[in-house]
Image 1 (tube, rainbow, N blue to C red):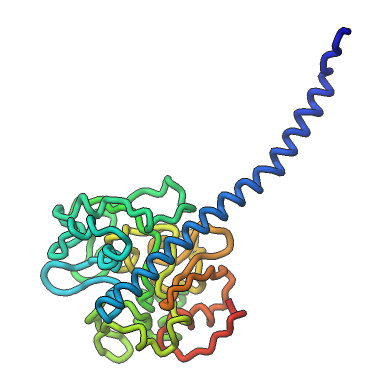
Image 2: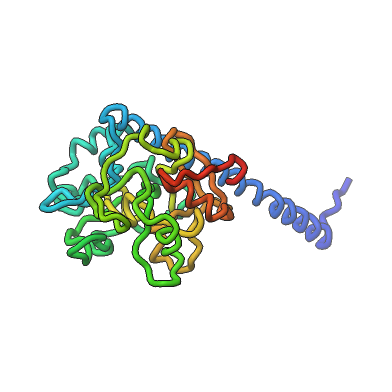
Length: 302
């Protein structure tokens, strides 16, 4: 018996049905992939939180968010201090703490990618930063003088502060409400603007607000690199919400944020990790960033 071929109309109907099925299937596939990436990101920042606790157990003090001082050995990030606690002993061995991260002596090490420092939701097109692109956060200012390229790092420490900003700039909100340097991991021996005292190291048990109510680390869309100390590197500055939304991409390394829909991951000093929504109340957000604000935060407020 002779088989009848498809008519053009039937073929178009079949193609349309296939197109509809693909259109319905793609969002589900993309959603499943993003869920997997978010889980991996959460696991990464969890590993860093546990590394901080391990460092604290060994040293009986929390690590500095960045090193600063006279002479050499400045701008080392908190991640360089955590290397042995995230199974990166070989990188620790090759890293020269007596020189800056941009020094040629550290060139190969700082350009080595650490998977734990990478959020898989960040597009691969985000470029690595070179020393000439990174602004030195303290005098003498300018940019790093070296020629090193820095492997990316998408997680940074909460130093509990923000950079000086003009009146009316949202960056000034946190400083106005909470002064500055109110986190628990700081660049040691920096003058606190409010009382002119010097910052220092802290222990977990010295956090008045409690380890479960104080943010240790947060993720962001971009960064200068895991080995870079200071703002845009090992520290994040405070925006008015957990995710930076201003269209100016220059500040992506400075503030927290993510490519996950609706918010970003944050680790606390008790080792827990929580996803904070972009819509988190500003007062709650600020309270979670300070170690000694004495705020009462309910579980349903974020």
